[in-house]
Image (cartoon, rainbow, N blue to C red; front, side):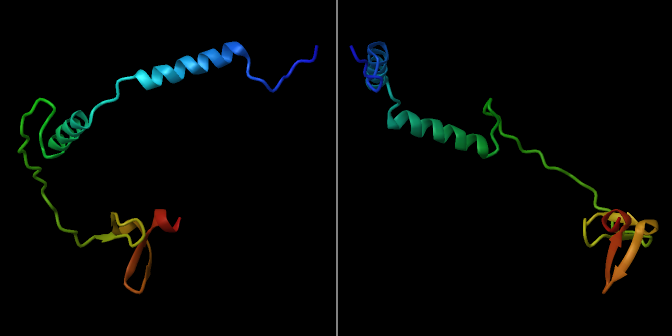
Length: 100
Protein backbone atom coordinates (compact mmCIF):
# COMPACT_ATOMS: atom_id res chain seq x y z
CA UNK A 1 0.00 0.00 0.00
CA UNK A 2 1.38 3.40 -0.98
CA UNK A 3 1.62 6.13 1.66
CA UNK A 4 0.67 9.73 0.91
CA UNK A 5 3.40 11.73 2.59
CA UNK A 6 1.77 15.07 1.75
CA UNK A 7 -1.32 14.32 3.84
CA UNK A 8 -1.42 15.82 7.35
CA UNK A 9 -1.08 13.18 10.08
CA UNK A 10 -4.20 12.63 12.13
CA UNK A 11 -2.63 13.57 15.49
CA UNK A 12 -1.33 16.87 14.06
CA UNK A 13 -4.68 17.62 12.47
CA UNK A 14 -6.51 17.05 15.78
CA UNK A 15 -4.13 19.31 17.71
CA UNK A 16 -4.56 22.05 15.10
CA UNK A 17 -8.33 21.84 15.39
CA UNK A 18 -8.15 21.96 19.21
CA UNK A 19 -5.89 25.02 19.17
CA UNK A 20 -8.20 26.77 16.69
CA UNK A 21 -11.17 26.07 18.95
CA UNK A 22 -9.22 27.38 21.94
CA UNK A 23 -8.45 30.61 20.09
CA UNK A 24 -12.07 31.07 19.13
CA UNK A 25 -13.27 30.56 22.70
CA UNK A 26 -10.53 32.71 24.30
CA UNK A 27 -11.69 35.82 26.10
CA UNK A 28 -10.41 38.84 24.22
CA UNK A 29 -10.26 42.12 26.15
CA UNK A 30 -13.09 44.51 25.43
CA UNK A 31 -12.46 47.99 24.07
CA UNK A 32 -13.32 49.72 27.36
CA UNK A 33 -10.66 47.88 29.34
CA UNK A 34 -8.05 48.67 26.71
CA UNK A 35 -8.96 52.38 26.79
CA UNK A 36 -8.79 52.36 30.60
CA UNK A 37 -5.33 50.82 30.53
CA UNK A 38 -4.14 53.42 28.01
CA UNK A 39 -5.54 56.25 30.13
CA UNK A 40 -3.68 54.93 33.18
CA UNK A 41 -0.46 54.77 31.17
CA UNK A 42 -0.96 58.37 30.02
CA UNK A 43 -1.47 59.47 33.63
CA UNK A 44 1.92 58.00 34.49
CA UNK A 45 3.52 60.06 31.74
CA UNK A 46 2.12 63.31 33.18
CA UNK A 47 4.39 63.39 36.23
CA UNK A 48 2.57 60.87 38.37
CA UNK A 49 4.39 58.02 40.00
CA UNK A 50 2.92 54.51 39.99
CA UNK A 51 1.63 55.16 43.52
CA UNK A 52 -0.30 58.19 42.29
CA UNK A 53 1.96 60.79 43.92
CA UNK A 54 2.68 63.95 41.96
CA UNK A 55 6.37 64.68 41.50
CA UNK A 56 7.06 68.40 41.55
CA UNK A 57 10.79 68.60 42.12
CA UNK A 58 12.89 70.91 40.03
CA UNK A 59 16.39 70.09 38.93
CA UNK A 60 18.71 72.90 39.91
CA UNK A 61 21.98 73.05 38.01
CA UNK A 62 24.63 75.71 38.38
CA UNK A 63 25.92 76.78 34.96
CA UNK A 64 29.55 77.86 34.94
CA UNK A 65 30.63 79.96 31.96
CA UNK A 66 33.51 78.82 29.79
CA UNK A 67 36.83 79.96 31.23
CA UNK A 68 39.49 81.83 29.29
CA UNK A 69 41.71 78.74 29.16
CA UNK A 70 38.96 76.48 27.76
CA UNK A 71 37.46 75.88 24.33
CA UNK A 72 34.54 73.92 22.90
CA UNK A 73 35.48 71.23 20.40
CA UNK A 74 33.60 71.62 17.12
CA UNK A 75 33.47 67.86 16.64
CA UNK A 76 32.48 66.34 20.02
CA UNK A 77 31.09 69.61 21.52
CA UNK A 78 32.83 69.05 24.85
CA UNK A 79 34.46 71.88 26.76
CA UNK A 80 38.20 71.14 26.91
CA UNK A 81 41.29 72.77 28.40
CA UNK A 82 43.50 74.71 25.97
CA UNK A 83 46.23 72.10 26.42
CA UNK A 84 44.01 69.66 24.45
CA UNK A 85 43.64 72.02 21.48
CA UNK A 86 45.17 70.48 18.36
CA UNK A 87 43.78 72.49 15.46
CA UNK A 88 41.88 75.69 14.77
CA UNK A 89 40.29 76.12 11.35
CA UNK A 90 37.97 79.01 10.39
CA UNK A 91 37.20 79.81 14.01
CA UNK A 92 36.43 76.18 14.86
CA UNK A 93 38.49 74.36 17.47
CA UNK A 94 39.27 70.62 17.53
CA UNK A 95 40.53 68.59 20.48
CA UNK A 96 43.26 65.95 20.51
CA UNK A 97 40.77 63.08 20.79
CA UNK A 98 38.78 64.09 17.72
CA UNK A 99 41.84 64.76 15.59
CA UNK A 100 43.58 61.76 17.12
